[in-house]
Length: 135
Image (cartoon, rainbow, N blue to C red; front, top):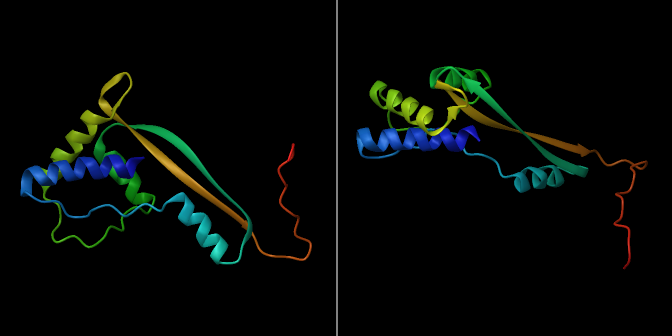
């Protein structure tokens, strides 16, 4: 998804410019952990689903603006802000690694949206469907 690609572009640019890499992207939750959290909270009949969507952007800065508006702006504390030179290099690296089809100046981003569904326990709760077949 976008986090993996953005992390790679930012890390490459920062390593080249500063000689080191600081964490600048929020960690992603594993799907198994999401379902386990619902289970530990007492929910039943848990469903975890993922929708993958690809979106083309005119440039990396439009993508970053969209990510910020989606709330993806909480990253672990970094030692210093990423400089303008490194940010421009990261944008160029991302655009080079993930070009949009048919447009040399645009880039493609893949988003993964996770949907978590769980039911609160109830006396009328339906039972899970058992596997059918021989056995």
